[in-house]
Image (cartoon, rainbow, N blue to C red; front, side, top):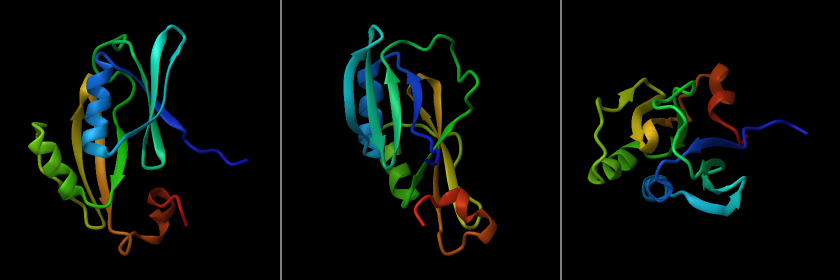
Length: 135
């Protein structure tokens, strides 16, 4: 059996706000909502990946040992427009690095998301496995 990243587990100070944020801006879909280990746990699919929310405020403030997690999109401009329309404030514009565009998105609970889009026709051959998981 191969290995794959199944989910990122995050604490949520306001679980309903976190759920709404990822549903509204990234088409998140709840796939499991249950009490486990004394708290509400919600698994949300975003594309092929998942976020596991734990209904409990973060134990420490700030991002701790996780700098960010990445969400790949096929239309970064559309998602950023939607985020801005929803009141999300960015500190800089989309960075265009040729075959790869990205922007850092501030999310609930001081989580930082790298939202990125890849031009699949321009990916250097040595990087194809980094961006493509279905070949």
